[in-house]
Image (cartoon, rainbow, N blue to C red; front, side, top):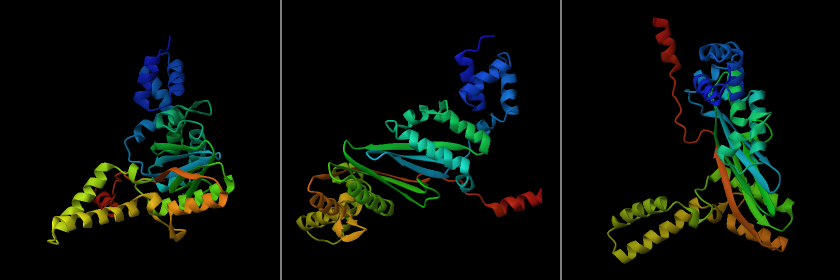
Length: 305
């Protein structure tokens, strides 16, 4: 019987197994869908479908760099225990390196080749092998035409893998080693301070407007005239910019300088322009609503049954 793409797609949706595994299962089962599902189950390849509904908020953030281009990825698992699994760590490291060869989009990374199959299928295979749901949640790439894209991993469990991953891009024709050294320091700063944007121009206007409205209401409570209120609000907005934009923040490595000034100091030392063009910060599991489990209650309930 001829195995069609539609049949493979249907089996993949039923089982959660990889495309090549689904094609093999259908071939071995003569095109019988239910028999193919059973074939996958006997091989342990259909387990992934049962895991897919579980919340995956643990895992690892991985970074990979080739000097002027770097990538950061977040691969989630259900438990921190899996993050300590060597096989899982190897997978995250490989995905990060692959991401650095793409445009950084989740779609491109998922479709990229890993050992003869798409990254998405390699992850599905890992779900079946390790026994937990996994999700390639997000990916990003930074690149400069000349200069350095530095990286930093906080809470590292091994080289390039940890709980927080940061990339910082510095565009310049200057000494790459010195650019990378400052870039890494700025990446450490970003890991610690979590700025909302690179500069005021890149701040979300809705966030600024919300802050401004709060400041206006606070200022009005002072009972001062409108012209004074306006000055108070503008002062607080400037302070807000200093707190949440990377270039205006006090540099944690040297609080006497802003990050912007630290870049300017390096430019003077190198005798050429240095431009901080962007940053990316991934913190493991941020924004994921984790399931709260009351183990004591579960044990008590089990004992009562």
